[in-house]
Image (cartoon, rainbow, N blue to C red):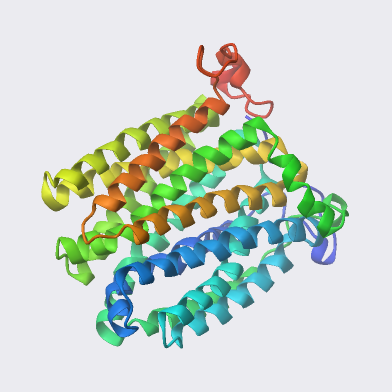
Length: 434
């Protein structure tokens, strides 16, 4: 197993993290990773009420999620090169300020269109926290150890989406949906204060000195890498399915199956528990089997459960629980797909961790735009649009693995022996025995 990589400490903003990252560093990284979840999960139970308050239909309210994903995906492409050149901490700090401004704008919105616009601003800030926290993990760890640490941090971060809908439902019931966004303002300010209690993870000596324009142009070079496309595809298709789930379940559960808003969080929380459990399992197994094998297992689980979601959403067999159970299996595959796909991509280009993390994040959340957007466009008052979108995405995630594991007679490339799929930095016990 690779050992953690820790550059020597520097003074000032260029100081690196300590040789052994303490609990404070890991806690702040978990908080930063959670911004993608808390920005959406907290207000999911409020969507039907927002629709009524803002005089907007179901599809238009769903577009507040799509608008967020647009800002979130495109913004990462800018933050990645900025952080590679100027450092992680200062870049994240600027992003948190934007997040606070956008959240306040959402709280004051008087129409669905205004809400959509402020959600973009909110996302432009939040994406810096998420994308750069992954790069910070890569600054500190390598190979399977990085995948292991990402799984652990995602598990800890899973507390946010677990309690988010529960807390959001209570806030809606007690003081209305606008208070949710004021809560996000407070979370942003608290995280900004916590950020300055940890050191910079990217020292000056390891920063990329090329201009931002040239760094942005290099995204095209990254997209020509076959393996990076494989990792991006598996994660991208899966994220599209996940955001179809996020956009579709409030109306499927609350409107179609008449689940009370306060109880929606409990059903949503089942999926978060599944994600946390699979991340813990992945953190244990990845050191033995390697992140490519664990990624393959995750995409197989996602594809077959997604097909079941579509079938049960179409037929209505099993009622509410007939839909909840396969959705639980699908979202639980997150633990085997997200951390491993990100780690695989980052290990291809360790010297450009910020840009690669941003590119992967942009593709993943950009795919989420399509997933949530399709659910909104084809919304018909039933779970079926969500079902077929999730099925399409689950199968797409599995098929993307062909870029990593060529299939005889289908890919046009001779089958790759198992020993060749072990990455240079993924010399685990399983790889070493081949």
